[in-house]
Length: 199
Length: 199
Figure 1: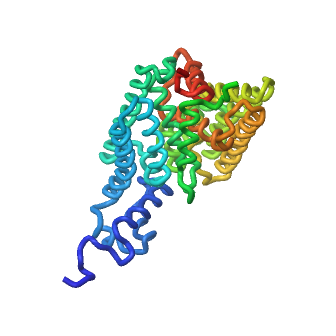
Figure 2: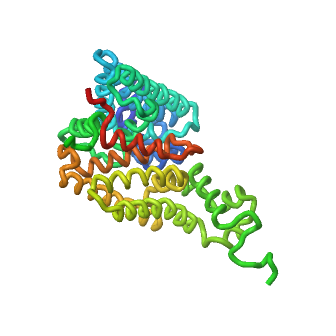
Figure 3: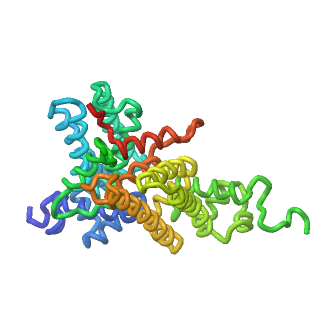
């Protein structure tokens, strides 16, 4: 087998990782449904069959991209649980980690948050999102049971509003050299202490 | 002129208002770009020319729908400014009013928040959204200058995170008979006082 026939490799310069990066950009620009393999091939400057060296089709690209976002969020949730301590501290851990995942994997999370459930891959993604939301709401509920969180707001509503703040990043955040720790501080300052100065 | 020839009226049952309601629903389901006047006519069960009795085209429907959302938000901002008092109180007024607008005009705001700037109408909408964001950030800045808001977070970031919470409603809020006051309370409780109980 000559080098040019080696399977699962595209033209030099396109490994699966960079192919996925371009695919996600195009999906976000034109919408997943509206994007064809032809569009991807044109953007990459390679043939469709070169793409098929890497993936079975558009669907697999979507799954890989969405998993990049979801796996990041679930790893953060697992680390938050493993960190021990009271639920409110684990919740803060989860929030900070989620901001970092969104900032680091912005195009992947953008794609995830636009999924509407039109395909099997998308329905699986929505199911995993719901599972993640439940994890968050459960942490809020525990923190409320511990007396650490105000009892006058429904934990499911709190979970949604917190992730409303976090998820809004996809609309306005631009990756910065100094990272996203300041932003995580801002989210947690508002979420846990509120804006009002105590006077 | 017979009744059936009266201009600016469609078939009985479709005035401009109900036509707009259906159009917004279809735009949100299929995307504005992907929706044709034919799609709208089919959904409404009327002819395209019956739609043209009311509006000059798809573009005008989009503008009317988006204005419904934006006008609501700007009215709230004007009322907040007119309410007087310290900036932090006007900011709370603005937040509560915005929750009410989103809850009451949910499909219109959903359409607004998905606009990407592909047409003149959409670019105008984005410009008005930016203007609104500036109003919010200015209020935050004033409240910070008054010493009423924590000085450690950038006012523009605060404005974006607050409206991240509010705008997330389009993803999960279902209109309720009892209205949205509880939800406005929840948003303001988190925004101004934070989740942590003071112990």
